[in-house]
Length: 71
Image (cartoon, rainbow, N blue to C red; front, side):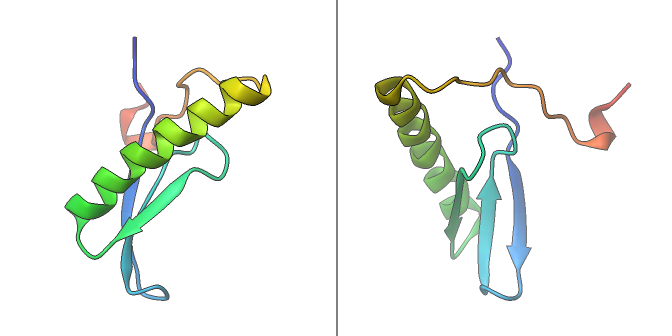
């Protein structure tokens, strides 16, 4: 099974590294380093999925792929 794609980028506005999962609306995290943001997004993903299950919300399948992966 494919896992969710994670975008990781520097935000000048926040002066932080930002990680987000486009398939999971509103699922994002930040950190002072790319590694920290990557760790934090794993925690955010786990909590997002747990909350969706608890509330009976649909869980989307991993679909997002950035243009560089499209064939």
